[in-house]
Length: 417
Image 1: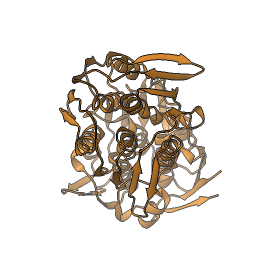
Image 2 (image 1 turned 45 degrees about the horizontal axis):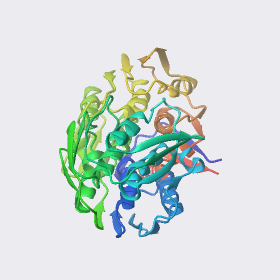
Image 3 (image 1 turned 135 degrees about the horizontal axis):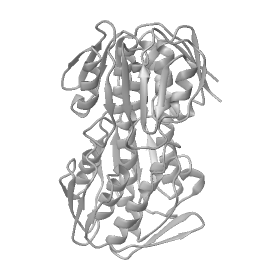
Image 4 (image 1 turned 60 degrees about the vertical axis):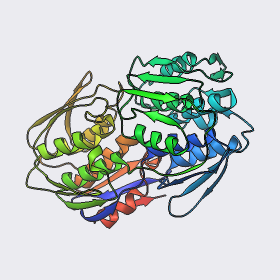
């Protein structure tokens, strides 16, 4: 099993290119199920989750081809097996995104209940409630969700909670429904309008993506298209925090600054200097870091996927920081590992209090989930001495060649196989 060994204490400096967004690429890949014509997708990151999704689609009969520049061509001319088996779904929760497209196009789907990072319950009841509103029947058997329908019918769907994958699943299903579908209390994350742009290029009629009310006018069929995946805002934020925490000076290219307002606001509060352009950003340390308070919430508020990384930064900031996690009930599992590095963190319920210390000390730590992995890498970059981060298969699910990118910025980091 791979692990990362980091010799900390080096300020990051230089330029790094940001990859395509994992959380945008995964639903866009499943959109290929909605048409029998080729879907060409550019800027797809080379990640374990992407490989898992491609394997799942190929098992269903989708033909795929990849190029070295991050381009993928998919064609679902004949879907021979509309099943998402437990063996694949248990490793990646986003596999549930095949449910809506399969029911919309074929009228049937058999999808295992999902797995993924153990950061919280994340139920799929909103997906099922929405599909039932569109006319599908749902049964549960042997750990599988079994959905059946004739042609789906447009409906008004009010989401009980904000769910990104639920919004994406229902938006894709509604593109081929008969009539108009309105999704209320929809997720507003930037990955939603990116999916909508791909679907629109395929012939869908969608308005309101990026707001809390999305309207979809169903069409008889979708066709092939060519779409480029948006930059990964969480990878962008992770590198920004790593540069700030190490006292560095880093320029990021191929980014979307407009998707990171909440993160940039909090970084500026810590005292770092940030410049932005249309597709680039520069973060430069400006003396000692200052403690900040933050609260995670659905977009456009501070993202839960950046909470752990900020905790690593706050561990060496002057003063006491407070972080309130409102999205996932188990998303403080990295705290115990940071304490092994010398961080002064106390947790009560969904609130963590972080008292900044002069320095962290290298140690062996274990990653518990994807974003926790990134936070431990940042902590290792800060710490004095050597830090070993184990179980980095979590990291490989969401960061493309992170040790190579950090090395180009001067980090002393290597992968040990």
